[in-house]
Length: 109
Image 1 (spheres, helix red, strand yellow):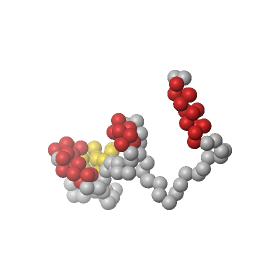
Image 2: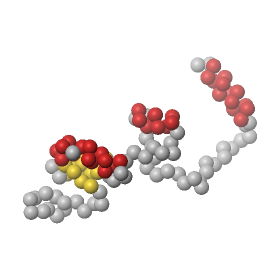
Image 3: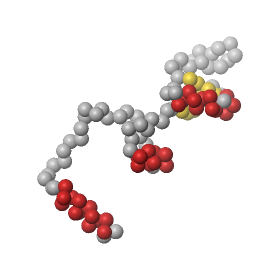
């Protein structure tokens, strides 16, 4: 990694980098960059330690958003294209029969 005149390491990534002390001093400004879609590389004494990335929840259901906020669900990095569909499961059990099975299972708890 090339150093500048001050001895700081300069990274050639296309993302914003910030040392922890600067991040603490200007947190709101860096969060604004993330809200605008940028990633921020957080460094400790010019060594990368973390990345702050935008949280994109549009397209997720309200239930999924609640689980993501609670930390129970991690959203995928890449969304599945709408043109790709799930394969049909084998078998010919009707929806009515499946609903009855699920209801019986819930009642037995």
